Amino acid sequence: MKKKDSAFKKGILTGFGFPGIGMSAAMFGYGVFAGEAGLDLFLCLGALLILWSMPGMVIFVSLYTIGTPILLLFSTVLLANMRQFFLVLSGMTIINIHSHKISFVSKLLWAHLISPTGWAELTKAKDELEEKELLTFFKGLTLALVTITSFTTVLGYKLFFFLPEDIVSIPIFIMPLYLTILMLRAVEIYYRVAVISGGIICPLLFPYIGDWSLIIAGLFGGTIGLFTSYLVQKGNSNV
Amino acid sequence: MFETSTLYNELLPWFMLLIASLGIFVWRFLGLILSSKIRKDSFFAKWINAIAFAMTTGLMVRIIFFPTGALAETELLERLIPFLLGVIIFLFFSRTPIIGLVAGVLAFSSTVIYNQII
Image 1 (tube, each protein chain N blue to C red):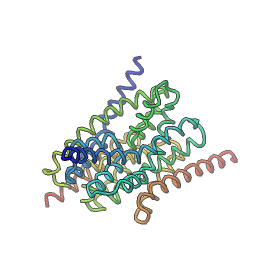
Image 2 (image 1 turned 90 degrees about the vertical axis):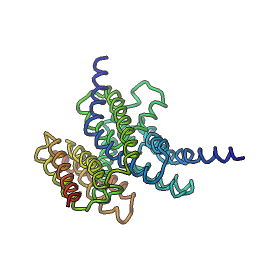
Image 3 (image 1 turned 30 degrees about the vertical axis):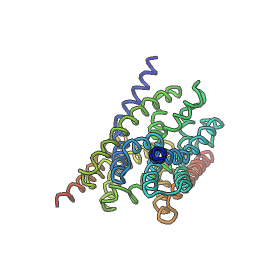
Image 4 (image 1 turned 135 degrees about the horizontal axis):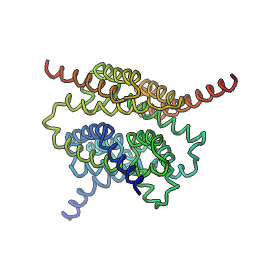
């Protein structure tokens, strides 16, 4: 019981630490964006909790405010969020969600709450906690992230009028740097190669193929990483 | 008639939100279903994890190069140099990653505040 509590506490503390600050800074920016677009506050907060995906939220606000047809809204969100598939697949495998005796709806809820930040913290926590504790850790982490991001979204929504955009950019800068550093902490060589390849391929392709660059960078980066690992292992076994 | 149209106007945004959420739900649902078929230490699981690593980094680097919203108000070099500084310092002090993070954020905020002042 105590161990469970400590995993939950660790999740809460992690969530309120740098990951939470980074993510909530981005949500602060989203709050500003939604406020500028004239979205209702409850809808802004509803989009945060129901979509729980920054690209999804930004697309929703942008397209909803210009009165886009439903089918276009659906297909744009669908295409821009394919990465959720890989994050959920990876995150749920790390947690080993199917080994826990919880209902399918609960599993869906935890799958819904996977974000790049949450997933990145899971990959870090898997080396520090036992596998069965990871779900409890994730519950604590998610509770903290939902709380802090809801708060900063409302704050951003209310404050967008007063703050210069340059100053708003400072907290938003934390998340990309923090998550890149977190990714570079991976010990295994295939993850490191995947991180570097993904970081190079995505911005190179983005001007030409937009959001597809993320999927291509992921597929190529991940494959290059695993192939490198295979070559290194083969080289070692030959020696 | 008036009440019906008011109700429609009030519910429409939430209906649109529901439709948008379905676009994300599809991927999450598929991810959850497929995760039951994969062994954690299998080659496929490693590949999926490597893809997620590459995609997450790709997304973060993309935010630095092609930001939207408030971050887009800053110049590319103003974002890129502090970002690289943070990463390089992290590589030197990888046991204490906070040093790289703080250095990068301090460098970026100094530039932004300096631009505000002049």
